Length: 144
Image (cartoon, rainbow, N blue to C red; front, side, top):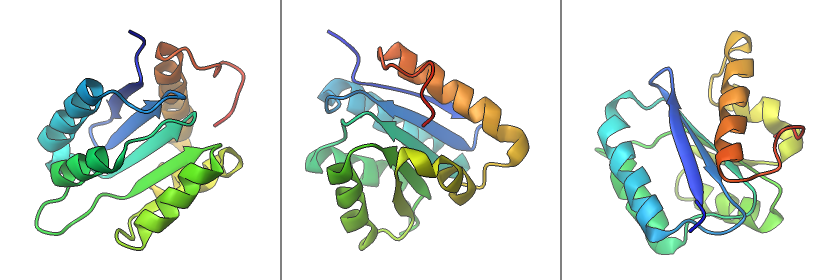
């Protein structure tokens, strides 16, 4: 079975998550949420790059439970070509003001939103491309 997501941490404070074109499998999503729960205290932000896939309502609840502690939230930037997904993120932002959607043309704004410095950007983007390659995404020449 093909992977539906891939993720890693950058310098301990930023989680990078790549979604395939399909929605994440329950097993992969649960593993991701287990890691988020372990990393919660150090999380400064989450950068998501989706080629169309994303968590369903149940999975979004699982993620919320994993990262929210004492009513705090984690700043999250979701970069996707999907207008539907950006609309869902916008709706979620009415409940969680720390999540924002960006088109691929707004990658610099997404990185700025997460506090990624100019010196870190090349490394962050290279790691995100590596994650996307694990999913078979055609990412080598595409900017997020």
